[in-house]
Image (cartoon, rainbow, N blue to C red; front, side):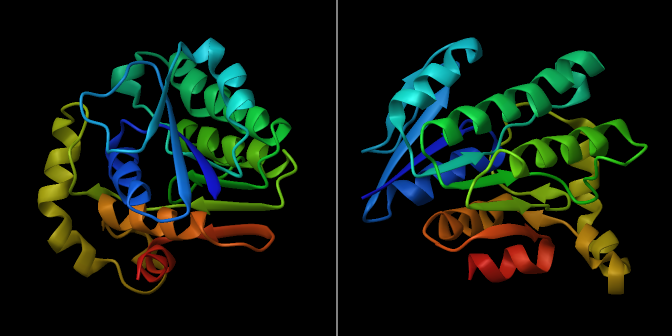
Length: 218
């Protein structure tokens, strides 16, 4: 039985991921959340706790695979400090706790263009979170860097993003060659790719952008 723990299970990708993993034989799925979701698939084990207590919860779970689909927006966070508290501090603390509890494999949803050397605050934060996870000592680390996420049920309204999603079929046609990695991608495809990765073995650091994510999803 492979034990998986997910942080960010109530977000756009996370909700679908929980459903996908709940249907997998040989997988015991745990989610760690601030508040218990209204709907939880049968068999999924919920750990409800404030973020400050997450490391202790993760330590008790002793998962084989840790998955982070944590993330917020500047609008929801309200400040750069609050954004970083989720997208870097909480992600890094989750990864560290999972590694200390024995997890060998870390999977995380990041962003296309993520780099700890980026001049863009959002992309720099995502890149620094990747670096923290990569340095935590896991046998294998997988970073998924999707473009604009479409489909699925969003936890909050994002008017600007809604317009971008409406225009995606057109703008995707303009993104050819090296720009193809910036094309939109359905959130359920990203979730399925993660679910498949959770069952993979191997070692090393792996980065998956749009085409690779679609291939992983099958």
